[in-house]
Amino acid sequence: DIQMTQSPSSLSASVGDRVTITCRASQGISNYLAWFQQKPGKAPKSLIYGASSLLSGVPSKFSGSGSGTEFTLTISNLQPEDFATYYCQQYSTYPFTFGPGTKVEIK
Amino acid sequence: QIQLQQSGPGLVKPSQTLSLTCAISGDTFSTISFTWNWIRQSPSRGLEWLGRTHYTSEWLNDYAFSVKGRISINVDTSKSQFSLQLNSVTPEDTAVYFCARARVVGATRFQYYYSMDVWGKGTTVTVSS
Image (cartoon, rainbow over all chains, first blue to last red; front, top):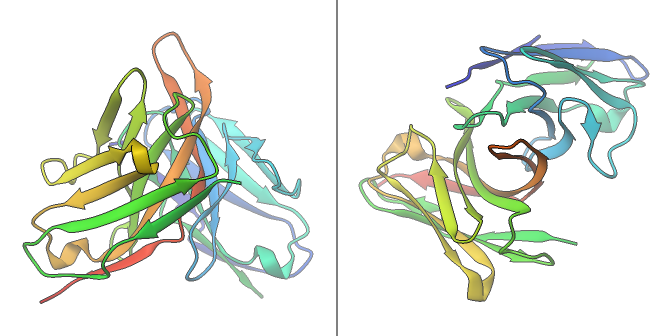
């Protein structure tokens, strides 16, 4: 299985901040990477596919980049509704695997 | 607007079979454009993809190695729904189970690539006697 890691595991930030989360794959996955946002008690919400393409309706404050084994998710101008846990997931090779998550908390 | 409606029991006894259903409304079910997935989430295992079903000229399934031999995903096209069966459950199968649609986002000569875009709300399943 392809192992996905994320860093940091958690971060504290203030409203208005810009934050970056890193996701690494144990082997090259081209750009077959997705990002999800999850709030407590809710299903994940899909944000990005293809490492950098936003799903319809996702605000442009979210951006993704990377290819191969290293990827980033950047969230600009953090707002209260952005505080959540973010997961990356590879869909290059099954079994499709998720990262352990990065919790974005309010400072 | 597509919706995925999950149903099934929230409590299953050890060694028995976990059965969940995901009903699709507002979208085409039997199309090469989508795959239909089951994912679970627990504190110990995080988010874990379990398997998928997808239609080419017939319905095909792919399963995670971690549950292969215990899992079955079935389709009822007349009801636009797909189901998960997980046999011989143990307390380690306690989790929140999600169904999700994945849509085609890329292709090569050899395969299509699908990324999840719509999720069901989740069903908490506890395995306990």
